Image 1 (cartoon, one colour):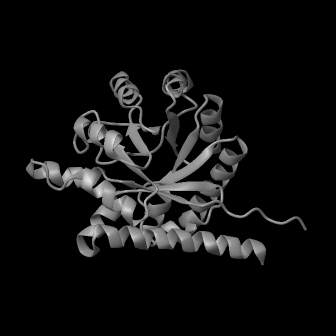
Image 2 (tube, helix red, strand yellow; image 1 turned 90 degrees about the vertical axis):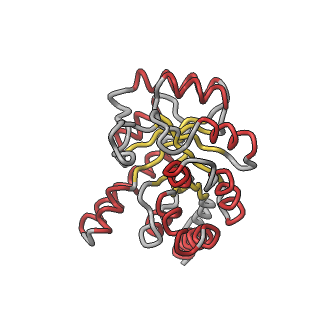
Image 3 (spheres, one colour; image 1 turned 30 degrees about the vertical axis):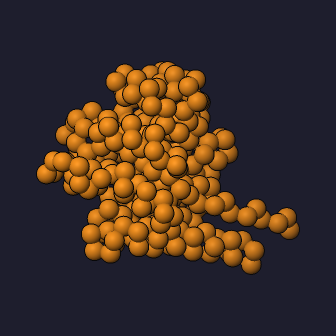
Length: 260
């Protein structure tokens, strides 16, 4: 029997949007997202994610400028595939841009991009960003058709939307949880076969992260709202360290099961 490959290291990207949400609720400069980014890195984050929305409801243009110039870890800029955001990305040149659907009235990102239906315009955005050395990620539902479309238009990365799985866990719907994990596994496998780097995120908590972290083709989880919210009770550093430990444990369990 051929030896199984060692599972890849699973990176943690910490989304700091909601540090800015708290700051903006009162105005001024406190709490500072840049300080949160540094704390996250010190606690074990491999990168920082920030979503610059059209309405600037949390992260600001100044935040992106400071993160880009001061951060010593990769910056993942989440953004709509709009002309305004592409121009900002080309000016600041983050390590990666994750293109997401954006609706003005939504509280958080709802569902993934329909890459199959928008291959022309998303493909054009991908080309413009990649020409400037920016890696392009597409936030999609765990649907094989969408994964294949992402590969066809030249994306570097897909980020699989874990929201449906997390909602099933909240509802304690075991059948739905099983279906959604199966969808994530299938999408991750196809993405890896297509040469895409596979990430995942949205709604992940201490309770739901392990099953997603155990999918060996996934190489990065992006987690934000839960970590910032939990930090109110336990501190940001300790919260991120606990998440990092849960991710590492899940990968160690995968390695153990493959060698057994």
